[in-house]
Image 1 (tube, each protein chain N blue to C red):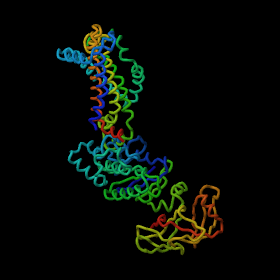
Image 2 (cartoon, rainbow over the protein chains, first blue to last red; image 1 turned 90 degrees about the vertical axis):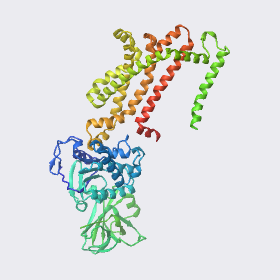
Image 3 (tube, chains in turn blue, yellow; image 1 turned 135 degrees about the vertical axis):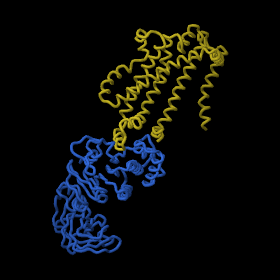
Image 4 (cartoon, one colour; image 1 turned 90 degrees about the horizontal axis):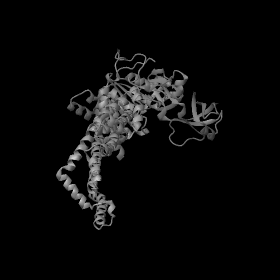
Length: 333
Length: 255
């Protein structure tokens, strides 16, 4: 595998469990033996042991030292470097403040919640001012809500500190949201690297596409801002509302799983609601049914669970109502 | 409420002592038990303390225990660390230690009597042996049980192997090591008494035997009291040390 990460960038390393993401991080950190070359700023670090590489590594299970309180955990890397006590104290306080865990200063890891441990582990790693930050599925054991919050916080902090970061995840949505670039690893091989937009709208092969989930990529002929970060785009005559951070939209991607079908006109706001015709039903006997549906001039691929498919009584040629989930539609330049 | 707790603990003992006193004073026990009243025992304890006899023997036993125990534990910890860190060492020493570990300390006595003869070296060596094996074993176990992930984490934070040993591995292995030490502390007293009873002319154990031959039950009971107090104190000392050094582990217990 050949991977380049640019200075100050956050690279999301995406792949299924067992793909080799953690192994890659271990190689970069130098805590396993490996064949090959690892270069920091063009200089080889292969003969440097882990303790000399200056890599900050937040492990998947955090590995906080149970016999030290939070402050001592954070101070560990600095104490090892024999920094003066006053300097250490200052830095620890700074990080406690940054990670918003000042009130946990003297607690032990055992008494912390998952999110709190996460912050403590991050603070400990940041204390040594690493030139490279490795985060191995750091948000894995958290509930969705905390996960979202921390994700945004990590993103913000990374930008603030401008530290080159690799963020490992198996969550596709997370990779897309957090990364400047996304690298997809499957079965120990690097499959694709690019911006989230590139990777998600144009997966390089079937396995990557499977990982990401089928997407309907539609080219937009025009778009207009309708306020509050919402845009209305025009794809071959069909108007679709999407949420977008940027200001230029050339294409959108609609996940096949996020198309919802109704026999009768659905109640509620009419946004992104259409009438369509089922063109073709693919793999009707598997647990997930794929269908091609015509909406205006567009043909969309949809995926739904078998029992839902059955309960709706869908058949080829049938007219159906469908709704696109606004939140799930991605807009790209 | 705490105070009440302590008082409540003493009540059964006080009751027993009262019963003892009454039963002996009123001659309710057959003569062949030679059981003196509690107050007579107290008297004897007083005399023995004043005359320095008790202190003399106690000190001898104590020194033997301390020297043997400290030496055995220190070596045990060092060997344990080696075994915990080096697979080769572990594989080499484990079978030997596992074989020798179960031998009761007193089992070594005949051999040691032949090799060392009767003198101060004998009880100290026995205590040394009976401390060494369990402590080495506990240390090796404690060290091996430290989560490797933590060691890797410390590595990435810049710690050298020696720093990792002193700041991470040893502290984390301490609770297990302490368990070994605590068990051995109690054991050491039992062993020293037995060794002194059989082979040594001085010490509390020897005092036991002398008292027995003179049918001085009061002295015997004094020795028993002293023994109980020493064992208890040792245990308490270790509990205290453990609570100070392993405060983080207490958290595990509390939650």
